[in-house]
Amino acid sequence: MPTLHLIVGLPGAGKTTYAKRLEQEIHALRFSPDEWIHPLYGADIAGEALDAVRYPVEGVCWKVGSDALKLGVDVILDFGFWAKEERDDYRARAAALGVETQIHYLPATKEELKERIELRNLNLTPGELYVSTDQIEEWWAIFQPPKDEELGLPTPNSSC
Image (cartoon, rainbow, N blue to C red; front, side, top):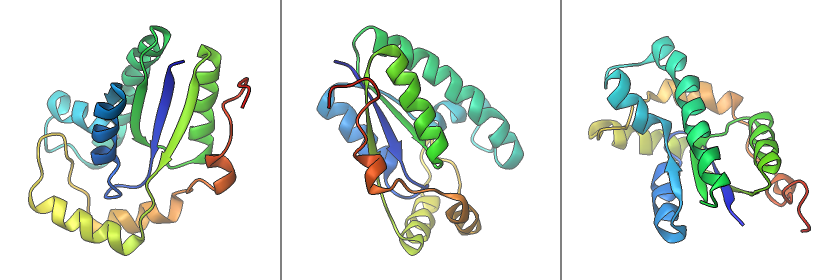
């Protein structure tokens, strides 16, 4: 049965690196919105302009991804999924398609995130967007890490 893989974590947690490895291991179709935003809107997009394009890009990724799931292909969404509500929404979307969902959480301390982001910012590659340590502080305050019971939730309508 095809599976929707949700990659959860803040910038610098290693989500995209993990998603790329998972893509190869399970032969899945991977969507990382930053990789689409850069070629579509330019490398200098930031702030409110970046926020304004993120949701439409994620919407297109979901449309193509949901079509792939219907065809029996595993899909990886490297969206971050900072809020439980968002994770629940995508679990429900997957259930409506009759597919499984697996959550992959990449935890990291705030200090680890800042260190990794500072290193990444020194050598940004295409598809990587600049993130400041101040943004990490801001996002840390609103991030809702999945609890153990959420990570162990079976997909709705599954026999697990």
